[in-house]
Image 1 (spheres, one colour):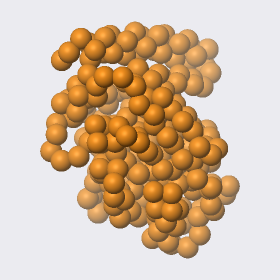
Image 2 (cartoon, rainbow, N blue to C red; image 1 turned 90 degrees about the vertical axis):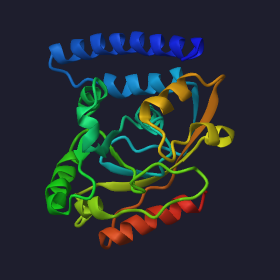
Image 3 (cartoon, rainbow, N blue to C red; image 1 turned 45 degrees about the horizontal axis):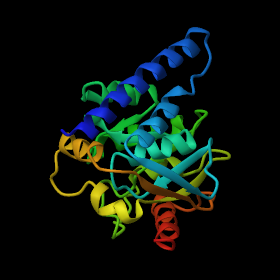
Image 4 (tube, rainbow, N blue to C red; image 1 turned 180 degrees about the vertical axis):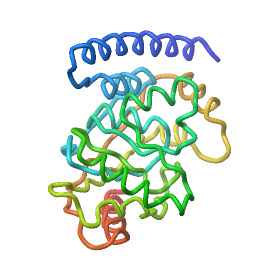
Length: 235
């Protein structure tokens, strides 16, 4: 780990301590804390992201469907929209990271658990009543930023029928010239990828295209197809 990575890691620790103090203060007086997504936004900036937002992000009663390149997508989207996330269940047991995910109301699901899909859908539907949007990465894995993988539609059954007022907003994430450096593909270990990102020289522009939202209609596959088509149109 080079000096740059060490410096950024120390900055993350300072940001975490500050965010936890502020979060605890809000919770102490019974107020809803805005600090978990704010902290994630700080994380994105500390690792070098300079966010460019195109469009208007929905900040409640919404499901954001985004392409997926790296763990950096999460702090970027949380900082821009205040979003919670759907994540793989294994992340819940990761030291520190799993606990931090719970602070931002992450919904943990087991991939490939066909027997438990109904329960996952029901829990996602409950999350839609929370005062923040929730993001799903329907590709199911990270990509290279060059191709857009097919969208998995299983969890979108939570939108059939759609809860009153809930919209779907497709989001295109683009790291521009830094895509090859930042995309998390292949068998690279998570810690290795994190060290590589922390040690990367300079900053990069991360463009978040918040596309026009639409009311979910039809079945889950139709919703997934519509969102994917809208993202592909600005690929």
